[in-house]
Amino acid sequence: MGNPITCPFHYMNGADAFYGWPKNDEYEALRAKWPDVATLEERQALARKMQVIWWDFVGGVMLGNLKQPWARSKRLTGLIEVPNLRFPMWNMEKT
Image 1 (cartoon, rainbow, N blue to C red):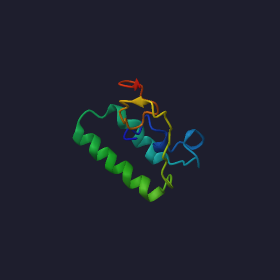
Image 2 (spheres, rainbow, N blue to C red; image 1 turned 180 degrees about the horizontal axis):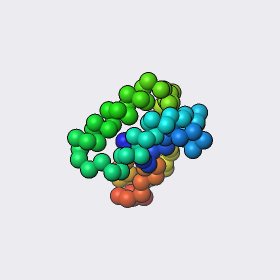
Image 3 (spheres, helix red, strand yellow; image 1 turned 90 degrees about the horizontal axis):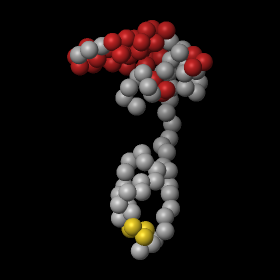
């Protein structure tokens, strides 16, 4: 989520953007500079400019939260909770 190059929620390039197809050329010009920024300070300054445009333009509104429930047999033990991983299988034992 934190990388504007790889996260589709950060795109504002029209038809290639996320649902709603936001389009903002000024934001996209800044996003295109992201890979070329070398220092942390420069990247933070670029991120601040991008955030100002994002909040003024309102490229997207995230509504709600997603909870992915899953079930398992009571005979399985040793499962480790891992965020964003649907079925972690290591450390699992069948009793």
